[in-house]
Image (cartoon, rainbow, N blue to C red; front, side):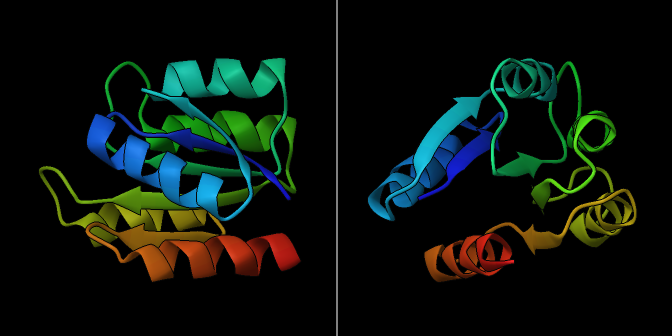
Length: 122
């Protein structure tokens, strides 16, 4: 299947996505923030990246911009539960900067699996 990188600072969400996508047959790697995620991606590219938006060290918006510079056709899913603003504001910005899909937390397992499958099918 595909190689997927999950960039998420919430360990529970990160572990859930890792487990879910591994069960779907994907090879999954994880990073706890945008800085680690971009470093991991540059070391070994992935087919798809799922990134949270609000994170320490480097947020998801910055990570998306960095990843897009290196691979403009990379498939990206942005996820957010919000922060000081509504999640839609962050997700809209992520979409403008190159996220192919956005999902508001909490999302269902089915929603994330469907988004992954759709993007990987092209």
